[in-house]
Amino acid sequence: MQTAQYFPPDYNSARQSFLAAVHACGAETESFIAPALSSKGEELFTDVAVLGQADAVNALVIISGTHGVEGFAGSGIQTGLLFEGVFRLLCPEVKVIIIHALNPYGFAEKRRFNEDNVDLNRNFINHAKSGPNNYDYDQLAKAIAPRSLSRVTELSAQLKILCYRLCHGRSRLQHAVTHGQYSHPYGLFYGGHFEIWSNQLLRRLTEKHLIRCSRVTVVDLHTGLGSYGKGEVVVDASQDDPVFERAVSTWGFERAKSTITGGSVSSRLVGTINQAFVDMLPTSEVTAVGLEFGTFSAMTVFNALRAENWLYHHGDLRSGDAAAIKERLLRAFYPDDDAWKESVMEQGRDVVERALRAWAE
Image (cartoon, rainbow, N blue to C red):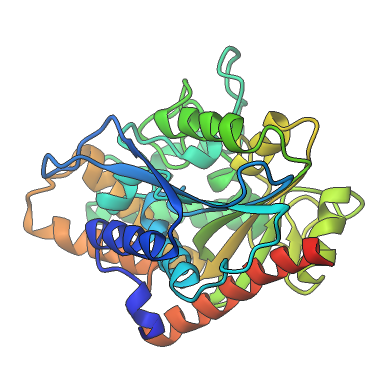
């Protein structure tokens, strides 16, 4: 199978290819039905493959589809790793848990967020308390997620965003928009006010497969930030933190970047899966990272998100413009380019193989 063939055209194809690859490996599989149906009324699933010995003390977790539409690339990498036999010769003390389409609704509907507009990677907070404030987002909320995409509204919104960037700089603008917010349920990067289904499922899987592991490495697959086709290991830890030191030891200083001390394509975020694994596994040595692959410019991706968000909340999903808006979002996170897919696959394979070698060494 050629590399590009690992990468699916839609959610159903992605799921079938992944399950076929798992079956070919003879791995154990669990399938979990999501609470939301697709727009076509079809059931949606998160599928989990487990390879290696159940009592292994070291575990590698590979996740796709945390951000829905980003699951196209993540699924391609997971399926390719399985078909290429990367996990064929695992050490007895190592197991691999592959979580396919953690946010299946977003994957199937070409959304970054779930059916409640929640960003799963901002949802892991203590919901018994008020969500963290994001005053910078509050200032820009109407420009970030407008109720209209008319020329007048768009011009006003773009001017407001530009003025904010000129006054405060690009980094603060990125932080304001992407850090996570809990006050605007129709906005972007909304963290929600309760633990959504995908959050609950990840906690159950952690309890079942990881709680007794001594060491856990998590690679959460993402796209949309950085230079075209380049992969970065995103670490939510400062450079003097043992987590960052382990990431550098495993993947090298050129690839591993900190969101806290700078250098990463990502801002520091709140309510992330990476931090959740640390909290869920207090007695384990946890190295949880994102593997982010660049696509197009930040503004191209941002504007595609804004348009899709408007369509979902205020537009007509049956209109002639809907398909074009959805396609625009899809390509912002999943370029229709075989060379990009081959590069992503190669780098994804290298990151996973380095994680496995780190334990062998």
